[in-house]
Image (cartoon, rainbow, N blue to C red; front, side, top):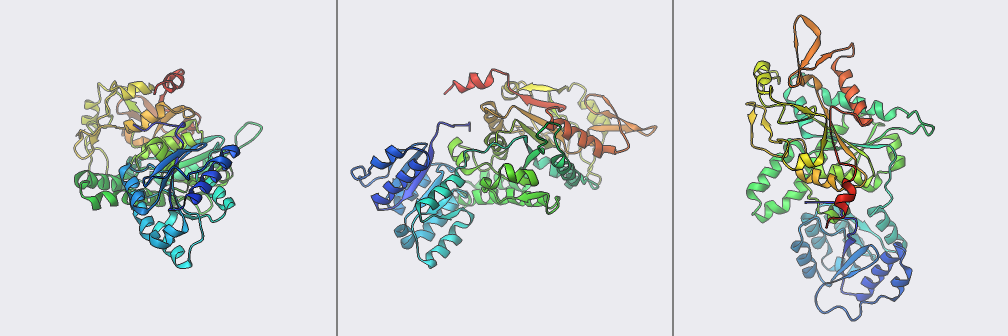
Length: 483
């Protein structure tokens, strides 16, 4: 499984026939990482023997491919994402650059591709079209260093940051419930929280970064890939389709914010997120930095792990999951919930309550209990109210395992997109509602269910939630020692 691997150097791949270009780039990268002495003396003259070679620099690995055949072999022999960046000299680009660049992008949709020498205007235009957002031009040493520093941003500490993931099931609620408008309410509340000042002397704003899941569109793409993945064309199309699914959901979410409230970032453009930017707007981003994906082995389709990796990258302590569930239970709290297609509500609350009598909601859950099978995480088919055989309910195992090894992320908190769905009432007591599973009584105030959602979001930002996942205090130290 994917895990934070901070000891892994950046994997850089250079395609060039000229050893002096490769040597020059090796020197520049060493220099930007503060290793000037090694940068002056290293030479490739006697190392190349008609095959790719890899040398270790200060914080990076540089692999040299002499031609596009070698580059293609290297790209296809490693599961993407693998390389942190691909670099080309002018000769490679002028000869067959657009085709190479387009082929790399199909294999690894977000890998940065950098042209390090001036090329003709025609090839520049063609390369830009082939590489789209992933293409970079850096013709001088200063340009290369600037591009390198942007793409591989290291100092990414954003104070008071909370990462919020709005899961696909949160969108499902509004889609299925005829009067569901909770996404809009959620965005309004998040913006209100973002604008409020802290009580401390610094009076710094609450910072947040929003991510989304690929949702139903992503599920259809993944199912299609599982079925037809042996077809090379389907396999090549998969990364781009998943990227588009994430971006589509981001754009849908962005529409619920005002023009000056949020910033929509193209997936992969993480280096535009920082301390200053998060003060004024809420960034919406779909995936972790590409070089983090390559370093830690995070698949493009694993949006849960992307969220945890983003939080770790920006040193956030909390991740808030907004989903169609209000907590963690012994088994799925929606067992027995069969959807009424006309209203989007439960057909029979009595049947739902009956099947939930043995269930129990858990407050603070040890990550080990989540991963070791002590808690059932089998999902439910909403149409019939029965188990559907799906696993990884709430969050994928890969994301939870990644969280277990994080040094900065301390807890994952759960908030229901529509807390009202978990309660039922009686006609003679208009403001009292009973929880389907726990039986607890909630008295609704004048602000209605919107106030309940706001209260639970605010509590989550302060580290309080109906349910949350944590690590034992000694867990970071304990697991850091394991290979």
